[in-house]
Length: 424
Image: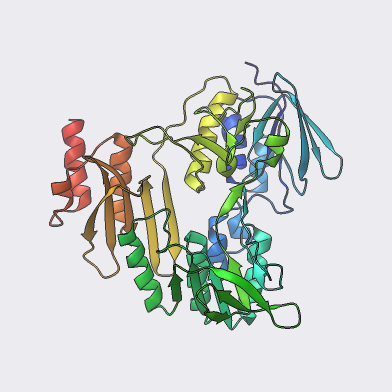
């Protein structure tokens, strides 16, 4: 396999930048073009919903790499160019056509197109003040609006929604969170952890409503949002509404080019799409579960910095002709005001729960078990527990339920002993 050809990466987010960087480091000799749709140089997205809104992060501090990095690695960074069409040949070569009519010819293509925020098909969804948060432009607009808002409603009790709600209430904005499910972060944590987080947010002054849905956003008579009406008859005043109900993969380009897509661009464990040549990485990719978790093989999309970086590194080995299957223990984090939630591993809804209360106020760890195997941990303000479990899962080490329930010994000590027993 040649590494002298033209490599085109569509998407200049975390996954795209890492793919370019790793491909060059692993020996790709030909030209590398990193094509970004936004006018901003590649930046970190996680701080947008927290540190950027609170003023502790700046546009400059979000940069993923310096301009010198791209020049030094011979990566041609092209900004403000949105690809509208892909023309793929049977051998993986082809071209990409942008909105302004420019054509980029490639010998190898990587799609790192990310995801787009979901919107609600409700009356008033297009009113001024009803916003989403996905990119830097959204974050700058939201930060400006927060300065003038008196009442805010966040629709969606996931990571982004709760991070923004915590930033808003800290800024003195009266804030409500509306979640359709029976608990916050319903898809990613156990009810026990959800309850701990909800209790903390309520204590900080956030009005939390679960098991309810918005039915419409009402107009103030001048084209701006005035309130959110819920299906239980409650009307919440709102001069600002954040819709944070998840994101869908940007896979339209791939689908139009004939690649198999189903909730993302379908790839194998080497990040290869259905044509056997094109690669897809990051939020846009639907991939085999990379974790060593016992149970049936699953396919999923992983929206996290960890996945963007690690899958991209593995994809680069495919590009240079020495493919290594993507294997990793997924992990996630969310800073919500004074709460730092860290998750290691992937749990299923019916996995068992063992709770370890922390020694300091605000600390909490929930361990998830599938049969006898430890498969995940949900840690609130407990970074040592998170690191210990992540290390153990990576090494294939488990911990008996009986030992896990014994809080006289730290998880780090428990798991170090188990690791030593497994690998003397």
